[in-house]
Amino acid sequence: MKYILALDQGTTSSRAIIFDRRGRIKSVAQKEFPQIFPKPGWVEHNPRDIWSSQAGVALEALAGAGLTSKEIEAIGITNQRETAVVWDRATGEPLCNAIVWQDRRTASACDRLKRDGHEPEIQRKTGLVVDAYFSATKVEWILKNVPGARAKAKAGQLAFGTVDSWLIWNLTGGRLHVTDVTNASRTMLFNINTRDWDSELLKLFGIPRSMLPAVKSSSEIYGETTLLGSSIPIAGIAGDQQAALFGQACTKPGMAKNTYGTGCFMLLNTGTKRIPSKNRLITTIAWEIDGRIEYALEGSIFIAGAVVQWLRDGLGIIKSSSEIEALAAKAPSSEGVYFVPAFAGLGAPHWDQYARGTLIGLTRGTEARHIARAALEGIAFQVMDILAAMQADAGIRLKELRVDGGASQNGLLLQIQADLLRIPVVRSQVAETTALGAAYLAGLAVGYWSNQNEITSKWNEDRRYTPSMKPALRKTLCAGWRKALERSMRWETAS
Image 1 (cartoon, one colour):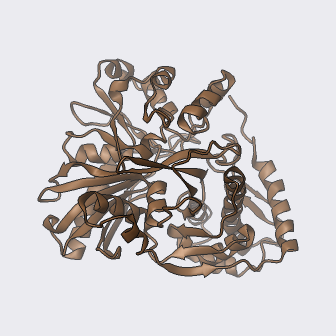
Image 2 (cartoon, rainbow, N blue to C red):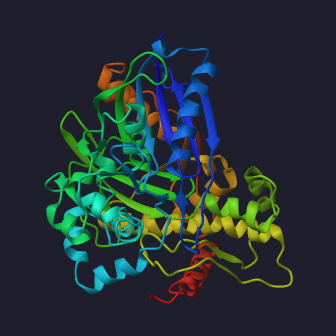
Image 3 (tube, rainbow, N blue to C red):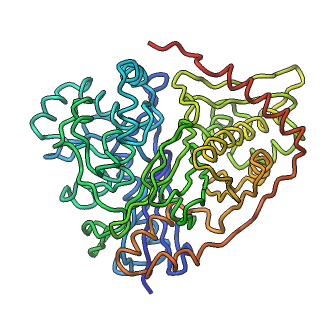
């Protein structure tokens, strides 16, 4: 029997998961790597940490399954999106730390773009709003602020890529500099209408075309790696949220999923139709398979599961992330406490780069359990805001929301979510749908799975959460959330 190896390079850890033909997990290996915070609002990763942790867990997963590389049919890659890596083409050495998608250092540059009237053109071409979240201003910052970077870039000596490109460069010993359409569409440099890097945008940001990877489909054989032993095809690439949409078998228009990871990301499949958002969402490429591009509407929340990490590491009110559910369950309500986890600003549909985390409604009676419950509610309220915008844009009402990600194992969170959304929230039997989506894309390319219908048939429900909250209580909670949200917004002063 042969298997598919998925490399899932996330924001806080690298994972390798081996799947069989039934889409079941054979082996998992995971390793966290350091988060670097040089200044308030800055978030960096050492690209060497990204690569070494990912290479290490790939070997560990093989050993854990008792397999050799000869038993791996193909490799699929999924990754944290928007994070910008720039490296020297000759040496393969990173020019500086990667600037992570959460990083806010280029907020003022985005403000200038808006003041100068560039946002409508950028949104029309890329489907994105102007925000420090995306890669373009990160690369622009590196070229302006790292000594010698501009000259090297002009001389064609530098390569830029999102994390998928960096991994493939290293997997192939520098032979391949590629990305796929899903990751390219998150850079604010890729024109989703022409399906190419946009010359006018490259000029606007001062980024030479020579730095950019070749853009491929999400499911094809890009090349091979021998680093794990024998030669294995690299055959699937998708940004983590698009991979999760595919792994959740949301392959028909009108189907949606939400991933509860470090952040929260809801995607609605819109098929071959690009829907420009009127409600501050993102129009993005879902995937390209066999020359057919499909699109999605997306709402991005910067801080979701990360708020639980903060309660653990920052406040110390829990010792492990898994304790949050039991602690929050001790409070039948948050007793008027609201937690807006805008540590890195607010994403969709608010897009406030200057919002900051707010814990409000505290009294002398407030205890750790109320804060814990408010944290879970704060995640669910943000998702509620996105769903409202998404349904308005698409002109449909969702029948259900499929969910995955680490925090989707929290039953209390999912019940709160169903109550606020007023639709069923359905957890997949396979929690690792991001990695599974990458595996499916790679398997399709090499014929491991015959077609998308075969993949869809493998999706199974684990548990369904149905709404049970009384409308009057929901109305009261939502009104309080809107007040708390308003107090968190525009907290920092634009420079």
